[in-house]
Amino acid sequence: MEIRSIKEQYKIKDVCLKERLDFIVPNIMKQSKSDAWIVASKEYHEDLVFDSLTPASYLTARRITMLVFIKSEDEVKRFSLSMPDEALNQYYPQYWKFGEEEQMDALNRLFDEYNPQSIAINISKDFTYADGLSHGLYVTLKESLKPEYVERFIVDELLPIKVMEIRTATELSLYPELMKIAFSIIEKAFSFETIQPGLTTCEDVEFFMMDKVTQFGLEYWFSPTIDIQREGHDGVIYNGVIEKGDLLHCDFGIKYLNLCSDTQRLAYVPKDSETDIPQWMKDGFKVNNRFQDIVCMCMADDKSGNDVLMDSLNKAKEEGIDACLYSHPCNIYGHGPGPTIGLWNNQNPIPLKGDIKMSYDTVYALELNVKYVYNGITYTMFSEETVSFTKEGVTFLYPNRDQIYFVR
Image 1 (tube, rainbow, N blue to C red):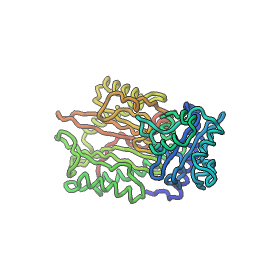
Image 2 (tube, rainbow, N blue to C red):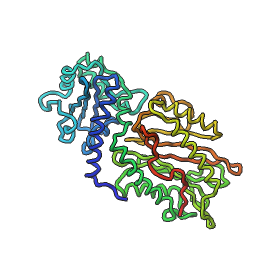
Image 3 (cartoon, helix red, strand yellow):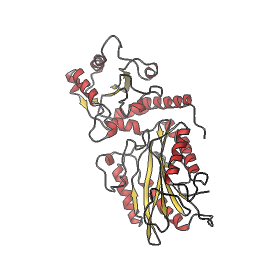
Image 4 (cartoon, rainbow, N blue to C red):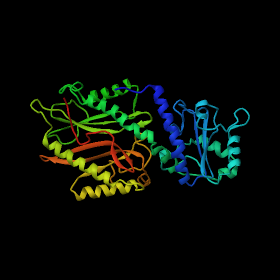
């Protein structure tokens, strides 16, 4: 599998940055209650929105990197009140007269010029992705800004959340490339080249997948997992030796071009005489696929994650499906900012995080499972597909979501 050169990756990331700054940030700010937005980060203690707003070569904050967005008539202006940097200043005009004034004096001067009535800062009790301003910087802002500007501080949690959640046109076009890389590893893992029944363990396959990711020069955003369901055995086997006749389940996510994937697939290890997957497994997985379709039908723009959850579960119950739904946004972060659609250990509406509403041009990990009974034993049919949600509907970003791999 060919991975783009770092130079190409940087160019692509910067194209996506320009699209985000030119289209997404202004649209979100115009819908928000804030007149100004401060994004400030200390070196190695960056705000979670930092990577969505800075060029590829600008890897960390420099001392204090401070970006400010200001509503001005019908546009949203952006400024850097940071140490001058050639890459950063391509996207943010340099406002701080470095060497001539203090950094916070420049921020006061900017607010004197534009007089914003509400100033958003990234602090939040409830949302991780809106809580990126460090306590130290918060104190510095309060002590250094004029009292009238401190009094105008507001919390606007959806501002950083939606800026990270919504995908640019280029990002959406790149997801199939990301998925192809991820599945090249999954498909190699689910093969007799990797698995020797009776010898290979779940842990062996997990480390194989981690090795492949690092050999590509990429990163996995969580350690991959492999588990087993075995005919006649009640429950999931999370560690152990893989045997013929096992149903394997992987959970795997990588990061590439500032995009995350998150995928679960099943694979069957055939017995010596078998040339196909047992029919009961196929039948069980058809039920899983039906629930996937139900969830997709329940997704809608401006609909809360909680409403998607409850509508999906109610429809599944009507059809006699024993379902569990725990889907999440998957964007610059794997468990990314945006609406939570259920938790695996809580199938009730999730306060606050589940109340966030869906937006077009977003990506989700469609993560769920159904229970299927065969010969008196309950098996769990897991699946997780990375999907996009646009005005055209829900799109599965890699084919064969209805197939169980046959290990060859």
